[in-house]
Structure formats: structure tokens, C-alpha cells
Image (tube, rainbow, N blue to C red; front, side, top):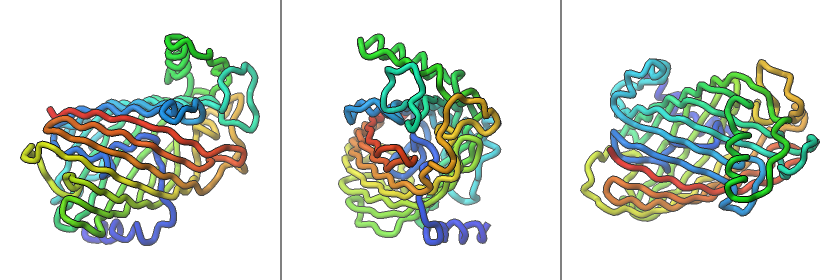
Length: 322
């Protein structure tokens, strides 16, 4: 175990890029909820940036509770001995579209239509002495029409009297999602509960995405440190902002290149056109009062393929302690 700790400690130093293994990061420090039991809704949409392209919507519902440790899939997660650990289960649904959704024909050189639906089994471990965090997540689900993304977007646009999506018959075909992600974070500077800087490294391998890398987060305001264990509500009110920047090394992305097993999709991005290194920046504000947490953020992602554009989207979070 000591050897594992040394390896994890060196990851931020030896890695060269930061991973974006999934669109909704629920285990990282800037998403920290200091409670053993809570329910959280994360909703992301490029509507917040006045666009309707690429990563167009993401929804994540999760619950963290001690009983989740005994869920059968939790056995596949890492359990560092002596660390304080929270366990959780979530459901995540993500949708992807090209720059125009009103065409029946395939828009070559643009992003393919696609959607994913996955069960997320995760743990968050904290070492308060060495000021470090280790999270692991197992994704099990489906990519393609079975995820129901076409029906969801069509229904939302009909309800809003917006343009009817027409290109979903050309979406990436059904395939299995089985991904495993490891995320390590290390505090490098702190000024009480008012300023904190950390670094992170992560890697993801599986059928949906293969990538790895590093990033860094700056916290400022009045917050509960993600490297402390605070289970009471002694501090009734917290407000803070964060700035996270990272670089992504991309090995494989099934939402662009099609499923790993099912190669029959009508349109995908050629391997040679995939951008192997991308930059992502995220800026957000969080307000907490007792058992309730609210967050708003904006994210920027550089082009993921040679003919792609940069993409900006936003999101909100609401969490309730149980």
C-alpha cells in the first residue's frame, strides 16, 4: 500500500495532460459535499451559453450513503486502508449533437449524434494527514439509441416549441459502456478556509473513453476544505468560487468514433481527425447553507476533432444532506 501511495503522489508530476473521462465530474474536490449521506442533481446544458451543439445536455442523479459500500459493484472500487471513504451510486445521461440538428442528412465533418446512459458506482477517499483524495468510478451502461437521447431531445424541443431535431436516425449505434476511472488530487497550498490550490491526475480506460492527464484547481472564498472531514453543520453558511484548468490526452472517444464492438454506425469521426490533446477550463460559484448546496458554473472545451469548434456550456447543481 505504501508503494501505491508513492505512485499516486507522483502522478501529477509525471503525467502531461489532464483527463476529461466523463462530462459530469461528481467526485472531484470542487464538487465536494461534506456529508456521509446526501442526494444531488447535476444538470448541464449548452443552453446556458446560448448554443445547441456538441455536448448538448447532461443529467446526473446520485446518492451517497453508507449502505452503498455494500452494493455489489462497489467491490470493484479501490479501498485505500486508513482513508475516510464515502460511497455512492448515480445515473448519468448525456447527449451529443452536431452544430445543426435540423437536417435529415449526415453533416460530414461535424460531430455525430449520440447519447449515453450509465450507472455510476463510485467512492471518494480522503487522507486528511497528507491532504490528498482518491476517487474511483465504475461506469456500466449503453451508448446509442437505447439511451433514449433522441426521444428526450425531441420531447424537450416540442415542449419549448423549438426546432425539431431531424438527424437522430444517423446517431451512433448501440454498444456497451464499461469504463473505469481513477482520480487523484493533492493539496499544495492552503490559507485557512479562504484560499486553496491543488493538483489532480486521472485516467480512464474502457469502451466509452480512454484518456489520462492532469489539472489544477484554485478555491477562493469561505468553504469547507475538500481535504477535511466535516460531518456537522457548525458552519451554517459557506460561499466560494473555484477555477479549474486542465489538459486532456485523448486515446479513444466512442461518442465521436463509434462503439468499440459495434462498428456499423452510419457516421463517425475518422481516427486521424481526432484531436489528441484538448484544453478545458471551468469556473463556478457555490453557496451552501446547512444541508443545502447550490452551484452554477461555465465550462470551455477546445476542439475535439480537426474540423470541430471550441465549445462552451454551463450547469447547475443542487444537493441535499440526508
